[in-house]
Length: 173
Image 1 (cartoon, helix red, strand yellow):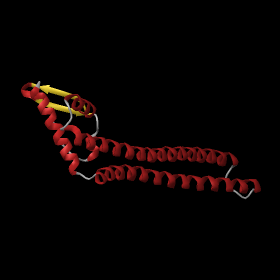
Image 2 (cartoon, helix red, strand yellow; image 1 turned 90 degrees about the vertical axis):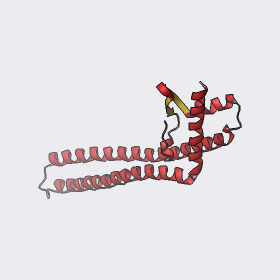
Image 3 (tube, helix red, strand yellow; image 1 turned 180 degrees about the vertical axis):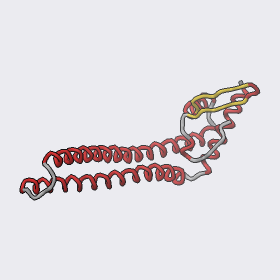
């Protein structure tokens, strides 16, 4: 058991060292910018689609006036159908925009979560070496979800915190 404890402790030390070597603003801003950029691209496309369908709907409604005056070559049934379709597309576009705006807000919450996880990990790295065995177990239990051991003490560690979001690219074996 002491071999396994030593292996896990070494991995935790490597993790903390790697995490400390990367500035917080670099870690947090990179992940946040990637997420926001993807959502923003989709949101801009959805807004463009909404503007197009709104213009289309407006044009159809203007054509209704021409039908009433007898100046249009479109039938009222055709226009009603086109207006209904355009209205449905408009409603769908509005829903998509709302969903994407919520995702944008969620990305801001994710930023807060990343900062919180980073701060916890850094503070724990500072107290880990001086901590008693119970405190070390508490820190390790928060960081590690599962440890799998195979023959020859070949160890796989599954973390609770997604350290990939911190772009540290650490080998967990």
